[in-house]
Image (cartoon, rainbow, N blue to C red; front, side, top):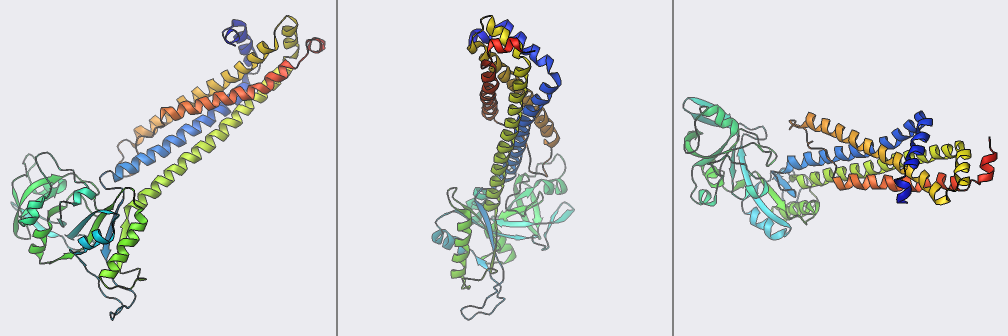
Length: 422
């Protein structure tokens, strides 16, 4: 085998055969090239989408969900339809006990969201209306807050002592402070109450409602400032990674219906947004794209490899007399067979490498075009090297198998019959 592979005459005959059928060979090679190009680009594109959604969700727990109170739609236990529901602080412990799949539960309350008026915030003659959130430290377990150096988020001591401290957003800092001024340790007025700035948060979509101007204060301070008692606007929650987040959502609503005396079939009493379910759907879509790219790519590659087999069959038929002379001069069937197989593998390998290079080039262009685009969940479209090598190995294997057909046809030619053919 190796003697045939490195034999100069073998390669002269292969290139001679290719030159005789330039156009036909080129079209066939393009077929194989197109197959692996489609596989590379589709796989890379689906990976880019997958990476983009992971980037969008990297600040939020994957199995997170949010639940809030609405109005009842079914009369129950002496209550009429249309009762306004209200979540309470003690719902937190109740849910943790009733739904063991829950890992974290963070009560949240806010002003200036859901169309409400924001709080009046002032400092040194500058003012504006901003959304203010009352939160617990556990929130960062569900939706992490990226705080600039030198600052921090709310801690338990802030809650226990009802401290008048706040974490402001990047835009809030820009609008209320001078360009080179460090806001940490300075004070702002929130609805005429002085708060000390303890941190500045970078914008991240934690909680689903926030932006780069939001202000966070301790929950205990919020309820004292606005006299909200134990009311909670919504709960941000995260289930364990192994939990079925859809089932957890149903269990949470069922538990809240029991505690707040709501009809078990009332679907409107509590609203929810299941980010974990959305994430799983995105992952499922990405997985489907990977499978589709694999199926389409392999089918196209197989069609191209079959085309190479057809080209070689035609080549063998056209070279009947040449092959007969080789056999008459002492060429063994094994040598003839190996020459045809090597030609098949060579064409397949060249087409595969060109397809990989072209696919990588297209993905590189897409990556450059989407590198700075944060509004659409797409980044770094790549294909793992092991998948590329596996696809190339599959192509070589198919090229070898398909080359056996024309190789066997060449071996079956009898020297005496070939020499008689004109």
